[in-house]
Image (tube, rainbow, N blue to C red; front, side):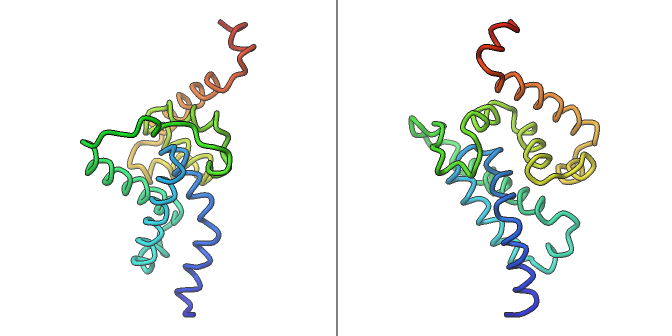
Length: 165
């Protein structure tokens, strides 16, 4: 095994789970997230000389995975979805995320889901997220604040929601 192959294998092993959880938080479907992350890692291997020098390699993989999903969606936008396409997944297939959290994340707008995924699952700071998404740091903070408030509301226990309303 060459040095380049070893470096990529180490990166893959240490990054797969975090990247999968980040993409899953955005797309909501474990199968779709796994397909997109696998494709992104395949692209990372093909461009490893470039990707290995990237300051945020995990973020590169997540962004590539999300772009792959967007491309797929645009190609298949005219198809009719299955009746239970957005059904909550069982605990075995959810990538370690609670079903209620997945449902709450899916209720957020796409940009807010991306910001939350990069912040929580890849532990990126505001400036790194802004650079990765091509938006201003202040915009990242706004999306994160709105997403946090919406998630807090959605994930509050039912007894607390009744009292607060």
